[in-house]
Image (cartoon, rainbow, N blue to C red):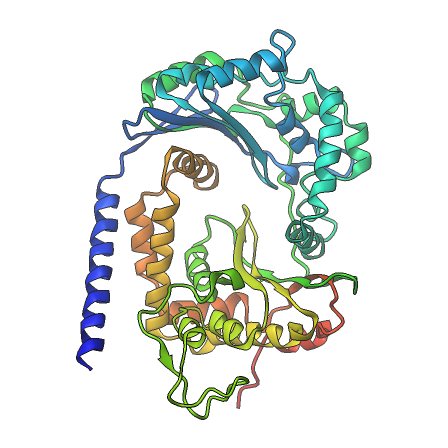
Amino acid sequence: MKRKSNITSLVGSRRLLATQAANQVVLNVPETKVTTLENGLRVASEDSGLSTCTVGLWIDAGSRYENERNNGTAHFLEHMAFKGTRKRSQLDLELEIENMGAHLNAYTSREQTVYYAKAFSKDLPRGTTLNYLEMLSEIERERGVILREMQEVETNLQEVVFDYLHATAYQATALGRTILGPTQNIKSINRGDLVEYITTHYKGPRIVLAAAGGVSHSELIDLAKYHFGNLPAKYKGEAPSFPLCNFTGSEIRVRDDKMPLAHIAVAVEAVGWSHPDTIPLMVANTLIGNWDRSFGGGVVSLFAVRVPSNAGSPSGVDSSSYSPFVALCQNLSSKLAQMACQGNLCHSFQSFNTCYTDTGLWGLYMVCEPGTINEMMHFTQLEWMSLCTSVTEGEVARAKNLLKTNMLLHLDGSTPICEDIGRQMLCYSRRIPLHELEARIDAIDAKTIKDVCTKYIYDKSPAIAAVGPIEQLPDYNRIRSGMYWMRT
């Protein structure tokens, strides 16, 4: 007993030190400075005094703002960003970037397009040069690149399943379309389509120039005025309406028995970024957690755990034997991870909480062998119902601490900080201080989780996307009936 007590004390001391370190990080976070130019473009930066910095443009324009005809345009534009201009070839640009020791990147989501550069702080002025119209000089070459990328994405089954999930959850709406767009669109998009998208959506109030690392806010303002001060603030005619996207409980199944594993995503409709229920759903998402066979059992326990004589063992282990595998499984904080680990229910699973402006998807993605699909789905829904009815204060406290730790770990380096600034400025119109986020997480208790999960999960019709050998996946009505418990 004394040995166990010493270990408990050691764990408690480490948790206290981790909490103190986290609090110190929060206290030392530099201020996020925000300035709005005359055309509405916002400049937001955080100066941490590093020798390197990340600077980029976060634009409130993604595939959600496309229609069936031009779906894929936003992603096409992203590909054109660093391919040279009429005044400077791609080779010249690449040599200049390589000589600077810089890195350029860009990505497109359903609601945002991002271009950013990471470089030495002294090279900050050269990292902000981006002329949207001049960069449209290599359309034909990039058309082939995008078509090859589409073929690669088709081999990424997680990407495929999530595209199917959006297609069924947001049927016949902009969120239901893919980010890359259909092949026929990529083959037909021309310079006029790209220019039209830029002139329609790239307006000052919809753009944030964000920077983090060793950056001078005043210098960034001057650069923003020089490079982006002429961007229009208003629309010439009527502003495009915000595309509404309604959620539909439904499913898409693509059965292929030649595949070794089934890939399945199931989700309910959640809320947008700025909704007050977002934080409780993030905690609930953390409670479900994620697991992969390659993880083993998560954090390795300091002691093996005795297997009780009535536990049963295919290898004939008696009550005096030790099982490191069971020890690892019991050390997992997620109950679903414990079940998946002990019962060999899946190869991996991950919970997700995908937020958009006015809606979201909260659910689970799993990779299973054909014979364990039914059981894995059963235990998943069992844990969802537990969130709605019987989650404990201890479980919620552990999830809150894990969520706060993950938030701090994510903000390690100028690039993730810059991304956090840009995304939050678009989503919330401000950078939420870490201490405010922590306070909002700390205010959540078990009752909050039960109330919020009941609101969005209990007795709701889910969206389901499944690919592979899915014969054993229960039919939709049976899965729907697992979204509630009969009360007596």
